[in-house]
Image 1 (cartoon, rainbow, N blue to C red):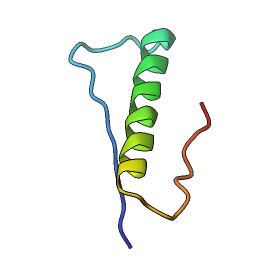
Image 2 (image 1 turned 180 degrees about the vertical axis):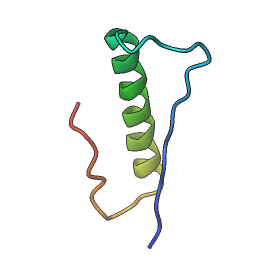
Image 3 (image 1 turned 60 degrees about the vertical axis):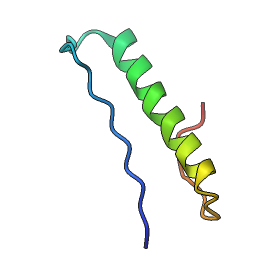
Length: 51
């Protein structure tokens, strides 16, 4: 079984209450994972969040 793992690291620490920045980083990671899954021409559903 092959797996694809995507992570995003903020160069500047975020406050736990900084929901806007956290949301942007989460969206970036999901978009990157979606593109990598597409580029790999994987036939298995990605099971990524809709967005």
